[in-house]
Image (cartoon, rainbow, N blue to C red; front, side):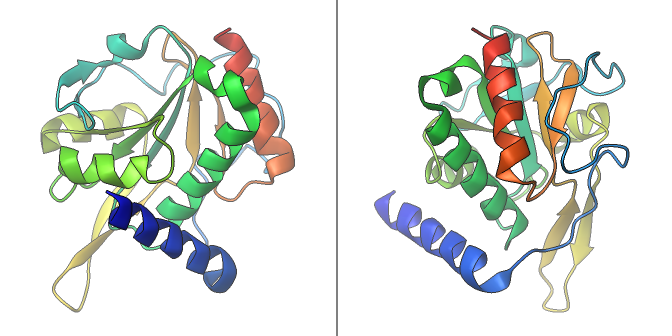
Length: 206
């Protein structure tokens, strides 16, 4: 576990220092990067019930198991070279800055690559950033249902090497306790706007 943690943090450092921004289309075109408030009303078309495997316990869970708090949900995968580790690093940093307030919402990463993201490996990956981040994986059909319900873009891209990668939505979805979308954080959004959004989300769960 320690080795995995060090490797991942080293990868993040290389990304932040040397690779720069990787351009990814934001989920909501209408949301500007400097929008600091949550939506006044939920976006009912996004979200819904799900049945997935909780990576840290290996247990089957549903959306009802996270209904006690608001949620910050990110869709990604462990073989992601830049967008996912950058986003998780930033999210973990925000949680650290929020202090006890970060306990007022669930932080979830749903894999878009269940074929490779086993519960054990996904748990090692997300916990390397922050132990409070919960990885969710499962049967590909169940994962596809979640991707569809959240209107997430996810597409397998074949590589010349014979391997593959995943192109996917890079926003963080901010959901209330009823699992309704009330805002997003765009990829590499300014901390000056991203952190207040998470703080407002946390206060909904207090």
